[in-house]
Each structure stands twice: as structure tokens, then as C-alpha cells.
Length: 165
Image (tube, rainbow, N blue to C red; front, side, top):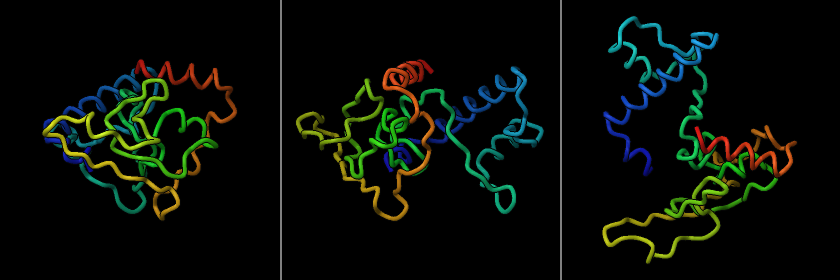
């Protein structure tokens, strides 16, 4: 919910620009244009990004990797607390604390295994830490097992690279 509260119309348009730039770079390198809206002008293109496709055009639009370090928690339902856990599915916690403001730069995510002490917050900050339980319907963290065959050193190398995006 905190993400939703922070997304202003200006932030949405900034995200659209970032998405547009990513798509253009992808096409410059020989990729297809399937992710570009086919509206014809910038205003119509912006509207196309806001429309949710229906029926045979429906699908899942994944986040771009640019700035992935800031997109925690991971997966479509926020059920994976760090990049380490994303690439190490067998180590994903069943429950974890969400909304901690302490960032774990080594695992790339917020501290997830304990609630934040209140003295870490400023006087005007709201504290909404809550336990996320992956056993509840809609909260599962299963699947997306790419990378599980890698060694710990390989996972660390991929995470270090992803921090630069």
C-alpha cells in the first residue's frame, strides 16, 4: 500500500518514460516491438500504458530490471523479501516482516527477519510493519526457480550486477 500512496501522476509519467526508453533500446538492439503501444502519438501511447488488456490480450506485464534494487519485495504479490531469496527459492521464508525501513544491501531487500525498532524512525514517521505469511491464499512464493542451479558465488555475482542496473 505504501507504494501506491507514493505514485503520483508525475511519477507514473516518469515510469512511462523509463519503460519507453527501455523498449526503444531493446528494439535498437534487434528486439521486437511487441511491448510498444500502437496508438500513434505520445498522449495516446501514455493512455495505452494505463489500460489493462482484457480477453485474449490479457497477460502479466513484468517490471523492468532497471532499478530492481528498489523494487522490493519481489514477485507479483510481494512474497519474496530479497533478491537472494528470489534466486534461492529453497531458502525463501514462509513468513517475513514487511515495511522495515532498514535496507540489506548484501541480499538486496529490506531487513525481513525482525520488526524494526521504533527508535529507528523519526517523530513523524508512520510504522506499519506486518508479518507476511506465504501460506495464505494469494501469498504463495512458489515457482520462479531460475538460478537455483547456480552456486552461492554465482548468485552473489548476479546480485552484484543487478545492483548496477
